[in-house]
Image 1 (tube, rainbow, N blue to C red):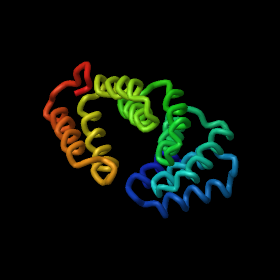
Image 2 (cartoon, helix red, strand yellow):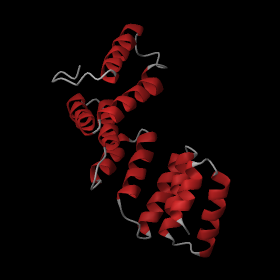
Image 3 (cartoon, rainbow, N blue to C red):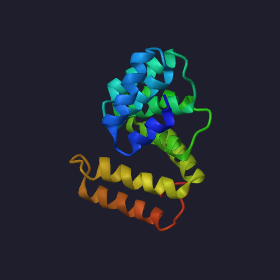
Amino acid sequence: MDVAGVIELINKGKLEAAESIIDESITLNGSSPDAWYAKGLLSISRQEYENAVEFLLKSKSFGRKGDDLTRALGYSFFSMFKLDEAISYFSELKKKAADDYFMMGIAYLLINDPVSSKEYIHTAYNMDAAKTKELLKLFYVAFIHPSDEVSENAKKELITKINALARGATLGKSGK
């Protein structure tokens, strides 16, 4: 099975075609780590995170290794709000990208560890300021803006800070 080709199908939204290839590969070789990895990625694309974890762990048990698998597990656990597990997997990455540090920062924020959160978000920002700014905006749109638990004034303050970052301001020691 051509994993890169299947991933490309998934990224293009051709999920049924990808699933057909994956299932055929599993039928031919039920212990194929690549097929189970691809099945995990397919589950992530369908937001079926429990299935994703099951398939990704199966891939790992059949010998798949590497940051791509570890990152997919971290993302899946994060998406299920199993934040300790997500942090554990993101921490295992041999080569972390800004996205990984950002995800760890948000996970620490959500488990009420603002000191670690700030450290990881700063690291992400220092690695790739533009990407981190975009991730901050996405986080705001996905989690903060629709929340009834955050006051309108707090939302305005957050969007002001995010917009300041987007215009090129740097994070100071206070994180503002």
